[in-house]
Length: 210
Image (cartoon, rainbow, N blue to C red; front, side):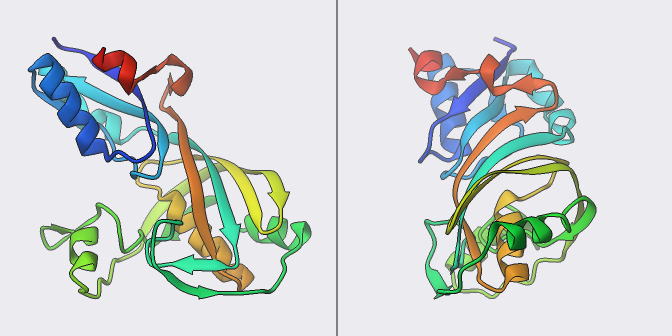
């Protein structure tokens, strides 16, 4: 079995767990092509057999996401599953949010979340963070090709974005919250596209394993 599997990852599972389940089912070498957080759903590309050698070419592909976040809340993981660090009661208007969003376009410098798979001295950042080790992750240049505000009903807002590889939507929400001075945290993330591969082409993990 030498395949490209388009999986619609369910919420609550790590990407590694998805790979493990597929490997167990088909008894073949298996790997994914870019991590999705346990909180996230959507397109996860899994390679099997000889196709696993092509993983690096998939990692470089651009991606598209739908992101729902909440204003007035900051956590250590930059998403709603983390420890709350501080909260704000200050209300934000749609105009204020749109003004800040206009600053996020083209090439930007972005610091990955402390709880991420970014490697630091051979260890993943989240492994160090869980041990209570303070992590100083250097910023990385990434690109935003498009960013649209789809819904706004304070304190929640929903964005769609088309971005380069290596982009963290949790960091995007965090940075938006910082610029507004109220904090912001991701509530939901769905990856809708990787390169020319669309989530509509994917199958649920349940279908693949059945």
